[in-house]
Image 1 (spheres, protein in one colour):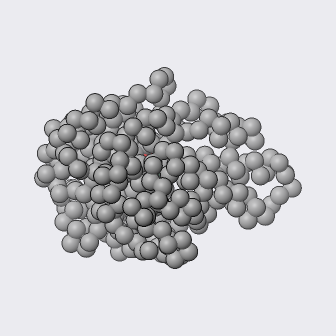
Image 2 (tube, rainbow, N blue to C red; image 1 turned 90 degrees about the horizontal axis):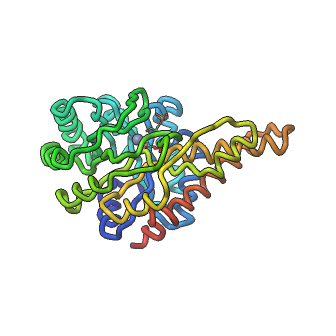
Length: 309
Ligand code: G3H
Ligand code: 13P
Ligand code: ZN
C-alpha cells in the first residue's frame, strides 16, 4: 500500500474496538522490525518520530527508510511526528513527507494550547495532514519537558478543545507516563475519565501515550547481561486491552522497543564476547523489535488482520 493518514485507520479501529500501535523509530533496524512485525500480522501501523529522532537520523533518511519499508512490506502506514513542540517542527515534518503530526501544547496554559493548536491544524489540514493534540499532563519526561505529577484531562475541557481546534485525535492523561518507571506502587489508570470523554465525544479517537508494558522478563535479560535497570514498572496489558475496547484508537510505545532491542544486543555480546559484527547484534535487536511488535498487535492492540477489515 502506501503512506496514509490515520483517518481511515482510526475509524475502523473505533468501530472494531481495537487500536493501532504507534511505535517510535530511530534507525533502520527499528523501522524494519516494526514494519516486518506489522506485515506478519497483516496489521496497519503508525511509525512515529520525535524531534530528537528526526535530529538523530535526519529527515531525509527517515523518509527514505519508511518509503523503502512500505515498498518491502505493503503495510498501510502513517508516518507521524511525535510530540511536535511548535509549528516549525510541524512544517519540517510535513515537508519531509509525514502524513500525521502531533502538536504537544499540553505544558502551555489552556488558552495558549488552544491558540497554538488551531494554528497547526490550519497549516496541516490545508496540506492533507491530520493532527493529534494533547490535553492534560503525563508525569515523566516528554523530550525536554518533565513533570512530577499527573494533571488528568478534564472531560468538559476536552469537548471544548476538540470543538474549538478541529483536531483529528486527542492524547489524554489518565495515569500513563513515559519511560520505564511508571508506577512506584500499584498500577492505576483513570478509566472513569476515559469513559466520560467517550460519552461526551462519541466516535472521536483518543490516544494513549506512555503505554509501554515494560515486560519484567525483558528487563531481567538486560540485567542478566550487564544492565542495571531497577524498579521499572509499566502498564499492565489487561488495562491496555480494556482501553482498546473503549475510545482509544492509538497506543504509543517506545520504551518496550528500546528494552527489547537492548536486551537482544546485550545477550548477543554476553553470550559471545568475541562478537563484533554489527549485523549480528543489530540483527538480533531487529528480530527482537519485530517479535515485540507482533506480540503487541496480537495480544494488546487486537489489530491483527486490520489491513483486510
Ligand atoms: O515520548 C517520548 C518518546 O519516547 C520519544 O522519546 O524524545 O527520546 O526520542 P525521545
Ligand atoms: P513509552 O515510554 O511508555 O513507551 O511511551 C512512548 C510514547 O508515549 C511516545 O510518544
Ligand atoms: Zn508520548
